[in-house]
Image (cartoon, rainbow, N blue to C red; front, side):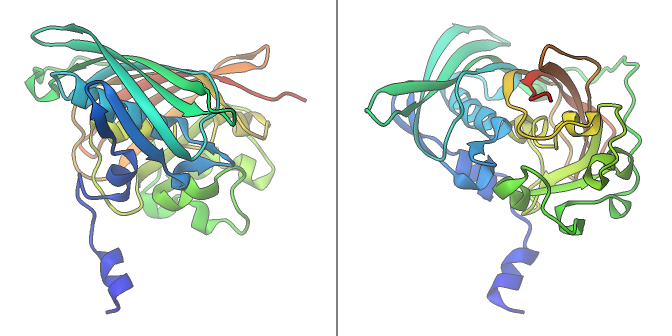
Length: 286
């Protein structure tokens, strides 16, 4: 077996994968972190919003006394580009079970001035301390077995807007939500997929922040095309995910005035709802 084939056969571990390396922040001083945003997580020319959320989530995990994101709300102010960035955090409150902090990511304009790209307010805790009682009406999405679903490698042409990020993800889309790829969108505003990282790294709470924003936009199944930039995204992490691929289901019920909402559910291999999110996104009509 060649060295490249041997490396591909090894499953990356949490803490030692491309996702971990590309979201790693370097503490310059208390509350200030440096990072070089990787071009590997771009959609068209902009850095993916879920990847950015994981970057800020990692900085907050270092700044706060609790390590696990419980709720993270982000406002995307300007499009982030690959390259150097600075994350500044502030501890708002610390408690026994929850700590709250805020973080902003900045890049530099051509004239050297700082430009704020994204601002986050988040509460962190310890997922392992939560009780295991579950009372819910939510059910896992019905998705065909992974071998009956389709990814970017199965398409005869590149998926619109997939860009570099597609090489770093394991996305296998439910054929029932792939009408847009065949020029026959369903009009239902639904997207469902198996999700994982391409190097086989198992999911953790930080990768859930990526998972909720990694699928093709539901706007495609509404018959729209082009970039669908996120305006605001809130993620609730409900429990630590079990090893294995995740299932992600996203729905849009209302498109009005050039904006739509996307509600996402993320389920793990143990049939547990591990994350939920809602985002407001802008669409180009016409």
